[in-house]
Image (cartoon, rainbow, N blue to C red; front, side, top):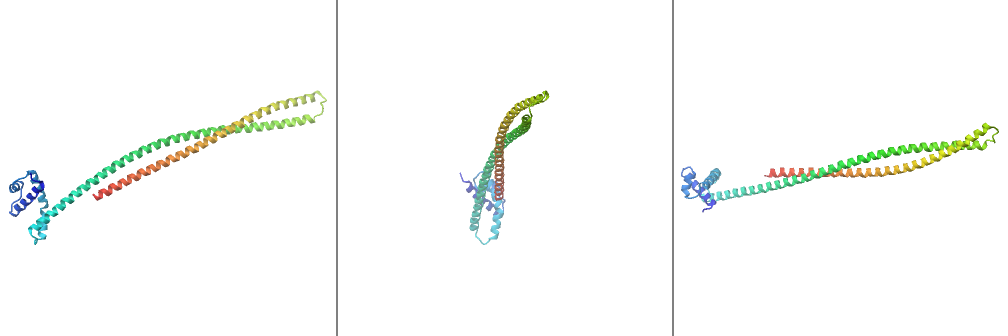
Length: 270
């Protein structure tokens, strides 16, 4: 079975001969001239002959002094060079398209991964924000309790100090008062002593209340300090998550930009 390249050369030679004889080359008369070959192969070769006829005739007209064998050899080399260039260009284009498809798939996969990471960071961000809001509310509640306890402590301390002052005044009056000469004076002295004892009991209760409120204020202050520290740490974690999100988005944007640039460059080359 003859090779396609041999058939092609025979078709070109037969078509050239027919054309020089003034006969239009067709599939049938070319096949009759070469004596073999399928209609499909002859048709393909004849189409190629027609497409290159103008260029070959122009080259022949430009160099009429060259012998026909030289022109034929040059034409053959030129046709081979064109075929090789076409093949190389086609191969290079296929390689570029394969690279573009690979880069596109990689960029799509990378973008999906970055989107999944960003979604995860957003969920973590929302959780941290909710925890931060909860801590803030707890801090406000503790601050209100601490303020109320401090207010009660101030009132109890003031009342205790006022009661102590009254008792001291009553003790001074009792000490400086001479022996009562009448029943009224004796009753007055007795009332003063009773009031002193009542005030002493009141002072004792107030001191106990002051002690309790002092301890309560200290505990609330410690609790508030812990919660404020926790809130600060939570805020730092939240800021870190936001920074990670920004970095991930910047990476994704850069990757997409690079991919677009590579696609544009490859298309311009092709």
